[in-house]
Length: 275
Image 1 (cartoon, rainbow, N blue to C red):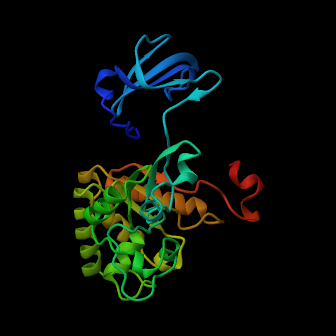
Image 2: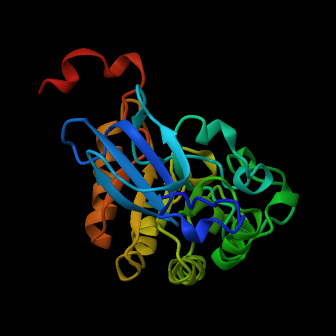
């Protein structure tokens, strides 16, 4: 939940609530039907929801004809650097998004160290000068200082780890490189990363083996992490790509999130999916 801040004019302490939304249509995210209610907020918490709230608030808002819902979570973004560079982030909050998950598709600003040219697809996030967060703690400090209008959670990108520890992204990682990536992922999880993401369809990660990803996934369960993947293919080999994703999840004993759940290409049309 976004933390609300009120003007410190000396009256705040005298008010029962900071915000009071009256006569709004509430959709609370529980899956139940919408209902009409008053909603009161105190500090950074919802203090009361009731058909009618009798109290005073620093901000008393008539919500007749409007819908009040929890902030939406955008679970798949590449906003890693934008939340720091553009902290007001109107494109998201104007749509009701109050939390973004960054670090998807194997690319993350957190825990990335760029030497030289930014490889594709990490260049989606920015230029080399923008990758200045070698640890999750470094990234978290930058987000805290920027005070973006949205909450931020980060995954750690597999391609970012590969780029940190390999001299050539167009080959499988060797045992020493895998162990170095594991150690960095372990630290990232300890510092609050949500899990590991892969972008196996991209050339910079395509040559990684399933066993390489499985070895990294072994770090996730201890840190309550998840495995999120841009599949190795969304075209004809999609069933094999899904099997690979599930194999990684089973091996690591962690939840699997398929980032782009779709079938691409004319060869996936028709009866192939009816068997």
